Image (cartoon, rainbow, N blue to C red; front, top):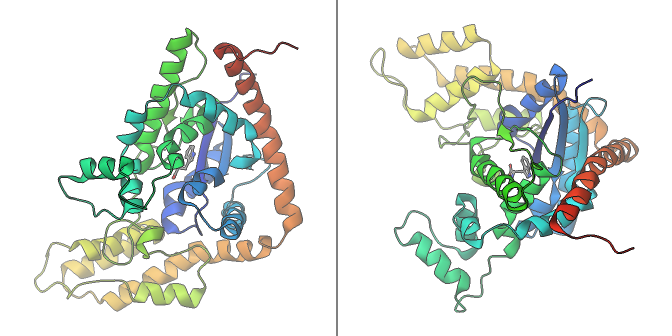
Length: 358
Ligand code: TRP
């Protein structure tokens, strides 16, 4: 039988999962898993989380939360390899090896690095002098702020997650596309430097259709942890309703067929993700003829979001304290992930000339 292609993706362990993670990633993972066409691997990127120096207890709790949420949302250890990144120590070793072929310059030019460096240094974004300023401050001694080297090499680590499993397909959002591009570049570079056909170049993977962008509740662009505009899978019913009812809107349409403002369009977008098409249409029509009441729209929206999140929440609560089960899932996942990883690492060492004398 031909081996199935590996689909692999990870989520950084930095907090509870929200609707953006769910529609952007998790629900797709579940679909991929259930399609049965691929060999799916999903992991929690705890080493990547270390780049922002979390409190150790928080980090551990976050890993547990995310595993639980993965499972509650439908990832099935019988069908997918579910594991924690740091349980595969081979990743750390290949990360060291691959870094020998990664340029500091290309890492510094990565958008996510500039973004994180800017945050770490407290530089506001948008100014012309931005890049120079960041560089200046990173090497400069006149600041006590620090951009750690782990942040710089974040893309190497991510590339290794992918390459060590020789994954072909990597479902990630738009914000990770540059990292994937770097992964392909590192793979090509390694292959050509050593004259081997070793690492496959991974492709982004989606089910086609337009990419989902899940907006936040504050009228701004994207739902995101740092934005504080999230609906979490673990949110209690009351909390969730309150959040939705407080979502930002506008004064409402004054004349028929007015264009929809971005803030209200966000609510429609959320509705399109969670409500039946007829329901969305009904509110769109009401908007067009100015009879819409945002309060009704929000009530409906909260109702439909709850239909998605409440069953997941219940399973989270059931699983959360089942250490025995979580441990079993992760041990099994780690074993499977290590099996592939150790094979790749062994071969990579050999290719690079790290060979044993005994
Ligand atoms: N960088 C990804 C994110 O922040 C998480 C991640 C780490 C990842 N390693 C990966 C995603 C490998 C896909 C494949 O979302």
